[in-house]
Length: 371
Image (cartoon, rainbow, N blue to C red; front, side, top):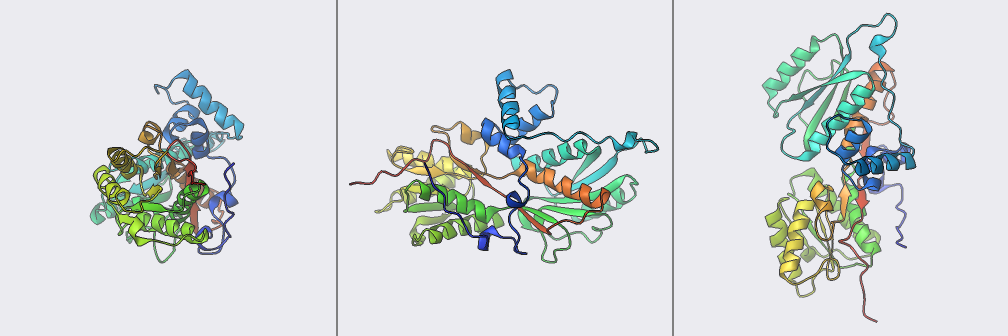
């Protein structure tokens, strides 16, 4: 049985106010938990549990998702049709979802999916505005939604984690920041716990006996790349493994770079026995490099990626990864906004970091040592 060191409630495992990550404070089951148990994507779980018509899913998949949900006690909230209550308006309340991009990757789409489903369950509608970071367009959106009497609040989101330059007119209604942040900390903010995710991914390899662990990172200017590498280094330090800069390469998230940097690491005289890649795409490229060097995965090289994209389930062997709870982040943003706007409940923390959990598959195995 694998063992996992219990980290202290400080450093990367505590928020800036000293509070614990959201999993410790909000232990309710999530759709990410169901996806992990059922071996499907977060979108698939949403389609099944929300009974979306026309979804081409097998009966076996639907039953597996429902069984996983039941096993952890997950229940969809009953939709609150407050507009049909006595004396209430027939119009639904509206949440404005303002985002820079949604088409550049699957992750912002999952944010929107989670927010839309949570809004519908709360008897609300989600209106999405894609601005491409155009300040004039953002101002026009805020002016337009400001005239809507049904508006209850705004979710301001980013397609990748970054510090945001907020539009001047934001704040006339309750606001939640999703996947972005500001130094002023004016609004409740929901982010993925990337440092802890990088820590967990690296520690997963350490728990299998590996100590010479390489890392192929993303573009260093991006928060996600820096934080995942920080988690990698902190995991090494926690387990008294010396950091070796020769085992670290900065990539650019692409298959080609994963292949080229994988070759570079695997041709070292004292090559790594395991590699943590900062996304699944680079991990697949790295796996291709290993095969070209006649190294078998996981017998000769253990490999773990990040993001848990759909393709990671279908590689040979299936790729271990670290799942970012994008769908749950969208849901949580709506929950916060509803609490603030409709129930006058202030947020318990201005910064919520959602846990990124390791999904173990066939690309990692115990390191066999001589003797």
